Image 1 (cartoon, rainbow, N blue to C red):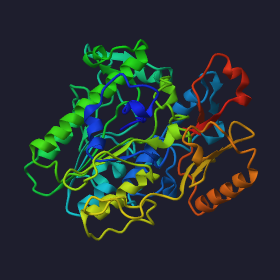
Image 2 (cartoon, helix red, strand yellow; image 1 turned 180 degrees about the vertical axis):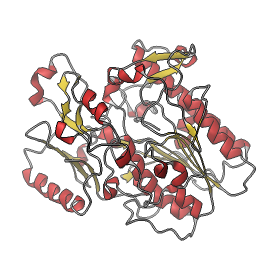
Image 3 (cartoon, rainbow, N blue to C red; image 1 turned 60 degrees about the horizontal axis):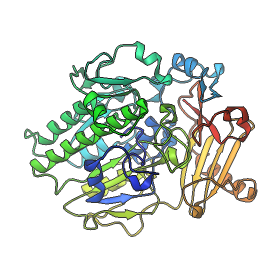
Image 4 (cartoon, helix red, strand yellow; image 1 turned 45 degrees about the vertical axis):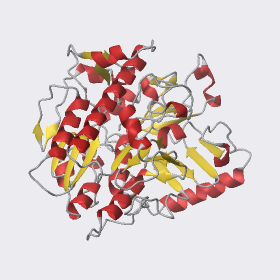
Length: 481
C-alpha cells in the first residue's frame, strides 16, 4: 500500500477504533501471521519499494531519495510547513532527476526472481522506480503490467461527478494539470473508474487467466491512501462520525481499498487458488504529515519521511491458507520488508538466480509455512543523505544535520515504541558508539545518484498553536526530497 500506517487498520494499535472497518485487510492477518514490528526499507516511496523488490538496502546502489525535478524543488523548498520553513539548495540544482532515480537493471527484482522460478509475473499499480524505457516493469521482470510510473496521480478526473476531492496545500499545483494515464505494457489506458478499482480489476484478470498454466506472482501496489485525497462520493457518505473533511475523504479511500482487496481475495477463492497462494499485505512507509491528518500514525511518533517509528514501522500480514497453521499469531521480532525477497526465493524452490550483491534481508518462512528458527534482525540501518538511523536490541538512534547545528535522538527499545524519552544527552557514550556502527555500515556504499534540491521539515508530533515560535524545543528533522 501507499503511505498506509498501522492506525487506520486495527483499532487496538491506535488510540481508538478507526471510523471505517477493513474486514478484508484484517482477514489477511487474522488468517495468517501479524508482524507487529515490521520496518520498511526506507521512509519514502521509491527507495522503500526498491528494498522490497530486491531484498537489498537501496543505499547499495545509490537510490535513497524519491525521483524529483528542480521545478518541484523550487516550489516546495520555499514553503512553510505548519510554521516551519522548508529549505531550498540552489547549489543542488541539476543533481536530482527522474533519469538518475530508476531501479538499476543490474539489480534482480522479485519479478525476475519469480520468472526464473517458472512463474508468470504481473505488476499492477504504482511503480515509481523510473520512467525511462530501461526502468519500466517490463524490463524488470514483469510479463504483464499496468502501472502509473510516477509518484501520485488522481484517482478519478478532478471534475468527475462521482468524486469528492480534498486538495492539500502540498499538491496545490498538481490540481492545475490534467491527469496522466496509467500504462498497460507501455500503452496508455483509458481509466473510466477509480484507480483503486482499475488496478484490482487488472490483477483479478491476471489471476484468472487460463492462457498460461504456470503459477503466478503478482505485485499489486495500490496507490491509496496517498494524496491527492480523492474518493467516491458513495464511500464518503458511508463514513460517519468524522467531521473533518480531509480525514473523511482519507478514510473513504481506505474503505475503497479494503473493498478492492476483498475482490482480489474472492478471485483467489473462486479460481481455487487460495490454499496455495502466499498473500502479503504491507505498506511502503507510514502516513504523511502533509495530509494534516495528525492521528493516522498514533500512538507512534513521527510521519513518512522521518526515522521515528511513525515513518518506518509498517503493517505486515502474511497469509498462506494451505500451510500457516498458527492463524492470527502476532510476531514481535523485528523484521524488515527486505526479508520478502529471500522469503519468496526460499518458498519458490531452487533456481539459478545471481543477485547483484549480498542480500540484506533474511527469509522468514520455511517451505512448510512455519517461521524459520532464526528470522528477523539484530540490527537495522537507514540513511537519507546525511540523516541516519539505527535500531538494535537495546537502542534506537536517529541523527540528522538539520535543523542546524544538528539533532540526535537516542531511545531505549525496552521503553516501548513511544519514543518520548530522548537519552542522547544522558548517554553520549552510546550515541558515539552507535554513530560509529552506522558509519561502518554505510561507508562502503556509494553516494546517492540523485540529490534533491529541497528539504521538508517533518515533525515528531502534531502541531499546537504557537509552537513554531519555539523551534529549538521541537522534535523535527529535515528530509531531502
